[in-house]
Image (cartoon, rainbow, N blue to C red; front, side, top):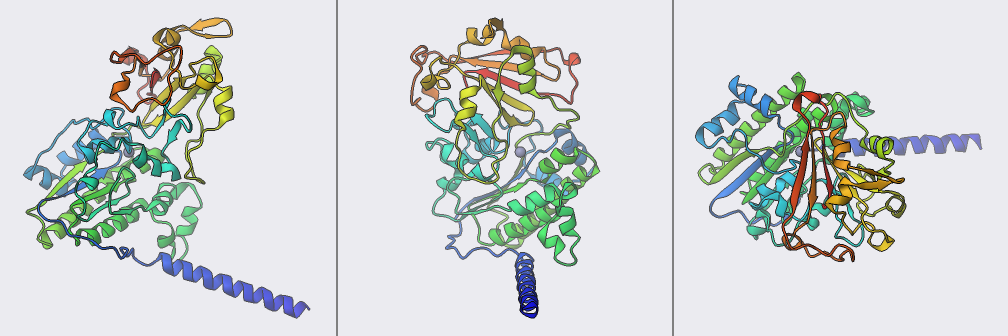
Length: 441
Ligand SMILES: [Zn+2]
């Protein structure tokens, strides 16, 4: 009996070891493009490199110091826009929209990476972080064609972008990105220590960007009409460690990868037709302290504001939590990049509670527990807030038709206006910045 149990145990261990070796061997294989029909482009083509979270200041200094020779060579041959603003708010994904459509992101039908869509009947909290990123493509308005859609049936490809509706070949390297982002702060550091296989199981940022570029080199051989490549590491690294010397090294590494790509384009004879653009979605800011806006609002006004889930790890479904919606006065949505939105519950009846949008007077005389608060002032008094803006009188003709109107506030015909309250720059610590948009969003 004991012998049989021991034998079964050894067999199980052997099977487990063999499975582990098979998995590790699989992971260590270089990425192979799927077997797709690819129609090589005719005429001019374009490649867009998006460097996520590119510090304007550091980029400029690195260019001046000659640390980005490949990007500098491209800038010398083409155009260099030093202080361009791609979108406002400048936010991952949302800020890709102007580059993939040629249209201002305010026309996109979405308002950021996380936002709250009052006009939807259900699932108002739109959060594209995590597995729910798939909804970004379906939430952007269909009348704005992406360049992936524009150039069908030619082959198009994207790497690490979820604003890519219509692309023929979408590659995401999410596992490598996650292991790189949390390398020094999690089990991934231990996994990397496994001899030989470790670097395949858990890449660091440099290895991850190199692996993504090697996929891009395979793709460019098929002459994509549009080729989009995101380098996510500067943003991911800054979120965890700030802008130290490694951030600079990541930029020089990305520059060398762009150099490899350009050399391959020339080797393939595509140099005369291929436009190469290097863009960023937003800058970065080192954050030394965080502020809990929901807690602050509760302490100063009694407002119950909910944040919802920040990352959807387990599901790709976007479903509002009815309990959160029911018990809250407001939804505080962290869009990202030190920018947040506050959506106030509007209507008094439960059917229209979140669809109905508060007016300017509701925001400046918000009532809780028999007291009235000017919420713009409440925010402006808060340490770390740089800018407060409230949007009122939304022009519904500029967006999709609302599914339901609030019976007390019919949709106005006039254009929206933004009310802004700014504190004196010297009154705020530079590391604590946030923007809160109130009301009609
Ligand atoms: Zn970004």
